[in-house]
Length: 236
Image (cartoon, rainbow, N blue to C red; front, top):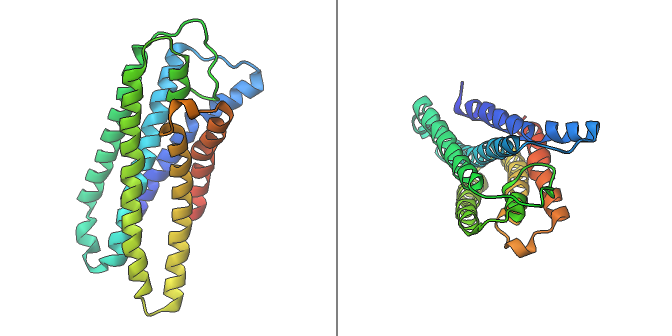
């Protein structure tokens, strides 16, 4: 029941749920050769995808802070990362994720979809759905850019800042084996973090004119399938 395992348990739940919102439906489409989804089902898939995607995002930031306190302030760790603090951080992650998803779902529900109804993607994502709409999507575009900018720059900035302090603390460690162990753990974590955020930034923060269906789908595979698959291996 230490903070690290408490956060890992929630990350594993978020990863499993994140992939489960898209992959089973995609596999069913491939198996049945039926690539249809109802309007309500599409909005539901988008909402749960955004909830667990944002939750994954926030949890990675919280876990980086947890590692920073554990390595840089070990004597204060039990006080700073108390069970109450961990629960409050988790509640904050859930509330922010749910509000983010609810905002985009409500904005999407007000749009009209006319003749074209083929989604150029393997799941209902915000960007391809906005491209299909025949309504004015300017409000949606502003909301998407604002929220994505906050979510995809805030936690990564916290992660980078925490790891700057972590690396500085590691370099001061007297034990060479300790430094090697810490660097290997931090290096693997940072690799997956940059893979997750790098592909997501390419999809959600690039201008609409630069979106290419095939590139977005490849990037989506990385942050919906590859990263959640790698996380258990890395943290184990």
